[in-house]
Image (cartoon, rainbow, N blue to C red; front, side, top):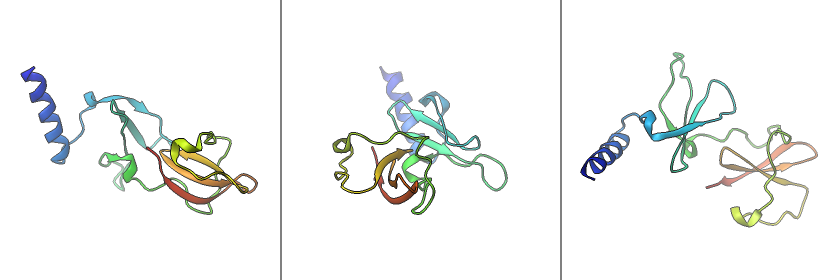
Length: 127
């Protein structure tokens, strides 16, 4: 039991002290939208990603919620690559009363016009 506490404490201290996240903490790599970006998901469900910097080396691991949204308002949204959100109450979303649909990509919820396939609004981050 003491070994477990020491390992866990060392892991937590290492992470919060700015250390690297050891690969043993990760369950399996989470698929990223493009090949250059590397994402991993912790057993707790939190997703960390990193991208190559200007030197071509991989940068620091960032919690997914710290990354900017992949799509901006006005961007074309690939509606056939992602599933539309059906359970609005689960995410605390307002009822659809107009010509829009909700989509979730990398824990970001977007309001998208299905006719023009453009992002109308970045609604919020999902948990």
